[in-house]
Length: 217
Ligand SMILES: C[S@@+](CC[C@H](N)C(=O)[O-])C[C@H]1O[C@@H](n2cnc3c(N)ncnc32)[C@H](O)[C@@H]1O
Image 1 (cartoon, protein in one colour):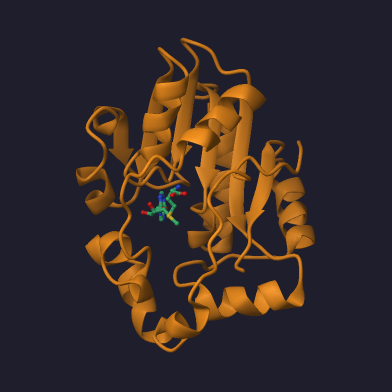
Image 2: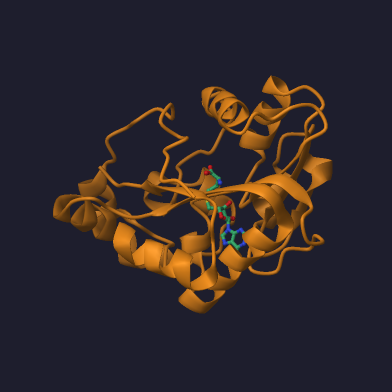
């Protein structure tokens, strides 16, 4: 288990926090449906346009190198949305076998066509795969959207279906300012802690995969 930021090559952007803050209470219910508004509506409602632009390629390379992924390995992305990371993993590891799961029918209907057939609709706390199915299970910015009991179950599920590696990214903060920014910005998260709090949850459920934090700056 390591604290390691495998998204360190994800483009950093200053978020328009003040602009979104005023509409946060109004937009939370809409965002939590994870429908068109969340992905491709206004920035106040979520992503403000979740489109493929290749930004996951360097991250896919980072996963390939860190976990020494090779042809034939199986990778699951829990909360795969439109399948961008899975698509790019296939691009950088020939013959990788990828699977995705997401709760959003909208995201899956609009997933990239090469990965769509390997993605299913479902919830992170009930993974429809046998034990030890995957060499790597990834979940980025997804399980903090479940209440604490289900979030813990999602962590157990990641461990159950992985036969080797797991990588998790969840909302957290390192400073008081980042914590305040997070509270002003976030729309959908319901379970969140500082790093110490998350590590206590990991220990309680026996999650032994790698992890890092999504920090609101
Ligand atoms: C912030 S997005 C992250 C998407 C992608 N992992 C990324 O990093 O770009 C959160 C994703 O979690 C999905 N999601 C929310 N609740 C979920 C659940 N209970 N089970 C599976 N996916 C869920 C949403 O539909 C959405 O695709």
